[in-house]
Amino acid sequence: MEPLADVISLLRPQAVASKLMQGAGRWGVRRSQTAYAGFGLVLKGQCWLTIDGHDPLHLCAGDFILMPAVPGFTIASDLSCEIVSLDAQAPLACQDNGAWYGDHDLEADFKQLGGYFQLDSANRSLLGGLLPTFIHIQASNPAAERLKRTIDLIVEEALADRPGRDLIVDRLIEVLLVEALRFRTESVDAIGQPGLLAGLADPLLARALRRVHNNVAHPWSVEELAREAGLSRSVFSERFTRQVGVPPMQYLIDWRIALAKAMLQRDAPPLETVAAAIGYQSASAFSTAFRREVGSPPSQFARTTNRRESTSSSL
Image 1: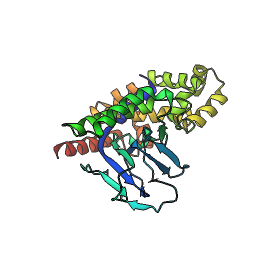
Image 2: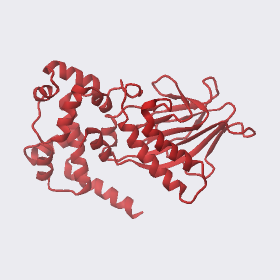
Image 3: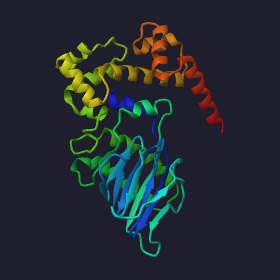
Image 4: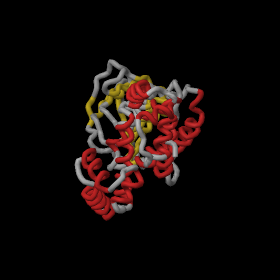
C-alpha cells in the first residue's frame, strides 16, 4: 500500500459529531485543545481562523480546514472581535439547530459545517505526529476539483432537511477526510510542515518511504534507504529528519510499533507472529522494543486494549 493509505487505515477515521454553525454581525469564539481530529467547511460567508502557534487564516465559502490533532483555536468574524471561550473537552453536541454566534436579530451571513473525527485510540498520538497540524484547502484552488465534488454533496445534504441527512453527511465527511489527507500540491498549506505529507511531497524521500511501507519486515538501514532515494547517507538522513520530523530509523521503529499495536488490538496473535511480520528476529527482541517505545509489554497492551474495546462495545 501507499504510505498515506497505510496511515489512514490504521487511524480508522470516523465522524463522531458534526453540526451547523451560523454567525451574524461581529462574533468570536475560542475552543481549547481536544483529543479529536477537527474539521470545518465554510458554507457561506467568511471568517478568520487562528490556530495556536500559527498566523491567522482567512477562510471563504467552499474552503476546507482539517486539523488531525486539534490544538486550541479561535474563529471570528474579524480579528478585532471580543472572543468568548467555549468548553471543548468533549466533541460538539449534535443538535438540530446547531450553534449561533453574534447578533440573533440579524440574518446569518456566515455558515460553517464543523465537527470532530474519532481516530483509533491505540495509534492516535503516534500517528498524529506524522500528519501536519492543519490542512487548508482553498475553494479557489483549481487542483481541488475532486474535493469540490465531495464538498458540494456535503453542502447540499447539510442545508437540506431530508431523511437520513445526518448519516449521509457523516459518511461524506469521512470520505472528505481521506481526500484531504491525500491531496498534495505545493499550494496546500500543509506542505512545509514536517510530517509524512511533506516527506511524500519530496520525490526522493517518497521512494524510500514507499519501500519501507511495502516491506516493513526488511532489515532496513540508513545506508540502504539512502540508496533507494539516490542520496548519500548524510544528505538523506538530514533531509529525511527535516522533512518528516524524525530520523529514518525512528520512523521505521514508530511504524513497526504502530503496526504491532493494530495487530495486537485486532487479533491478539502470538508474539512470534507479530515479531516476524514487522521485522524483529524474535519475540523477545520485539517485546523489548515495544516496551521501550510504548511503556508496557505487548501482552499487557493487548489485554488492556481488548478489555477496553469489549467494555465500550457492550455499552
